[in-house]
Image (tube, rainbow, N blue to C red; front, side, top):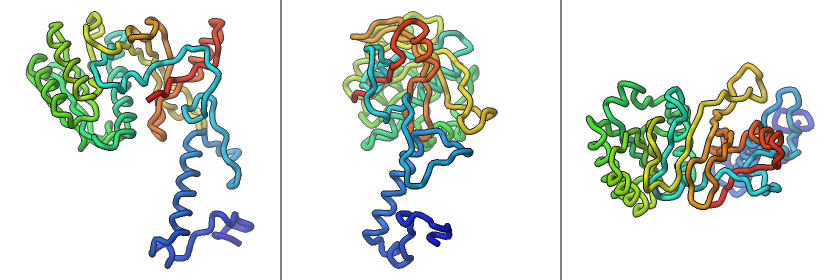
Length: 297
């Protein structure tokens, strides 16, 4: 009898209370062992019918970024470019895709804050008109995305010009891990100033533009985002699955424009992964099904 389980695994023994309280070496080893098991379990769907053996390492899914290198046909989704300092345009495919574009931007910020250790503050600028049309930031919703609402500096401006000024000044502070703006950029000069400020501070600035707006000058990348139904959860067919988006790369230096991808976001690992549906589309088109997201830093 070990840990209340007949024939339990001796590697899962809980150290005596005195050792745990003293922070002994055995307690630290046990904690690290449990953390490693949790990280491994987060990479695979949990099956209630066939739980993994305690001593067996769970297999890694083919679409996981942690699965290691896969054979690639050279077709990758360059999401790593969105982490570079500069101006990035995120445009909804249609009016109804506006919330999906915002959710994609927040997922990008969640991944960025999970990786960045020196900066944590996020600047979010929008106009009063945008707040009336789409609503204001909602704390419980940010928490559901893995984002701490206390890390957000929210600026609601009367005009797009005022919001752009606040965004530029925030980028110049060099204190932001990321910036998010839901404003309409009306002049090329404003876009250039924001781009230069973001590049100088090495801060990714995500600009949610109108679906009717043409491509902005000075942006490092430009994406079109469309909403997509999430797949079923692996442990419950009636439960919602991971958030999913249909992405189209409009412009990115060194990348061919017009390519489309279906990506999902894991709230457990705070990582994007290529959806299995995207690989199926590639196979039907006669291309390799072993697409993967680029994870270069």
